[in-house]
Amino acid sequence: MCSLCYLGNLMKNFTFVKNLLITISLLSVGLFANASDFKVDGCLGCGNDNYTVGFNVEFDINGTPANGFLYLGETQGSQYMYFEMPLEFVDTAYGDEALAHGWANKKDPSKIRPFDKIIGSDRLIGFKFPNSGNEVKVDIDVLACTEACIQSKKAYKDSDNTYQSSGYQNTGGKSKSDGDDYNNNADDIFAQQDGKAQIKTTMDYNVGLEGFNSLNSGATGADAGKWLYHYGFEFEFKTKVFGDDIANLTKDTLANYLVLGDSHASSGKEVDSPDTHITGRCDPDCLTTTTITTTSIPEPTSWAIFALGIVGLSLSRRQRN
Image (tube, rainbow, N blue to C red):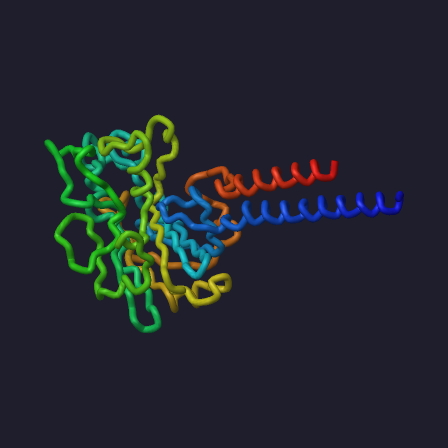
């Protein structure tokens, strides 16, 4: 009898250990399976973005170098890119706050940088993706109105406007800030959602913050302090535009997949930077430099799996008792 009791207890303990291992395994999957999912929102570090390769991008500002960044990552067959301009070149401050960011008008100090300097022509010029000989060239403006912008006495009526990242158009649209696809090939490489390319900028993120208004930069309420001042451009590609081995790209091999055009801002703090070029890898140090610091928390599905695991352990313990 004692032998049978011992055997029975041994089997119960085995069942408990098996359930424990299964629970730990499920919990690990729940917590980490989604850790590399990208969220194309124009904000570096606000989601589960896992950019694994970084490059320094040097701007020439009146003879003084300023450093921007180019980040690359991939997951589930898609590839992603985030391009960030240096604050010394341009930032998203406007209205009264612009004065503190060095936007004083040298000819007339009383004039401040208005919001419409951001809507219009602040953009990337001529990003080229060789794409196996089928070159794709696009301009991306940092912000646009979905329709013609509505103003009243030179002030934007935010309640009547919908602001968004411009993406690109292949029709040469006449509205402000429409971006351009020069050769109608962009749809071949950019991921689409609801008929629009997955391209977002920091200003697209900013206009979604609580307290946004076009009179003065910054956010209020629960989103105070979340405003992004960098000009950042985030892209999702539906093909492997950077090849099959982004981890081993160098500045020289990257040139086979991407050619930077001239960066442009109207108005820029100083001048345009015609000598924008990639100078080399910067990881791992620059990969820890994010625009905004966020706290990583488990996905909702992770909490559900965790809860199921606790229930499973509880039932196993009850069975053993």
